[in-house]
Length: 223
Image (cartoon, rainbow, N blue to C red; front, side, top):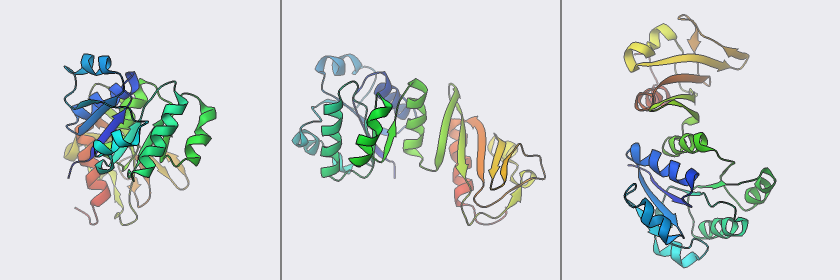
């Protein structure tokens, strides 16, 4: 079942998230108080709505509690961000990610119950969009159009195997470029093992990274 994601505040950061999610075939709702902005973006995104997220009834009417993750991307308006977060919490939204413009505000949003807080740039918008639809990604770093680097953690039930056995390049068309183990960071060779709880750093086409991630996080026996 695909995730439902909403983005409140459609400046460059919020718009980047919406576009990236749309390109990844994820259902995303863009929300902004500015009717003119929504009109300008209507030819770029399918699901857009004019709403004031500081009013709880506006969010209730949108059925915002049905969304898996809501991103509060409001810029340069601390009061609006706080009120929006409080409304989302009251409506029982499962996960809330909040953009903050200054580091000094992080503690405020932590205390108010934000699940994730970021200080953005454009790349972080792309990174966040990929993490929103795949929570197994510890990090996602865009490196070119459609390509990225991910950090994923092998689960506790993962059966150890060598890079040769995994054969990530031939089987998935991605490359394992590093491992972070309990005793440190290594650039692995063919006979090095990927073991349970290792952090695996992989580069490749974004869609193929998703396939590889599903294999790593669900594979329980040697293939």
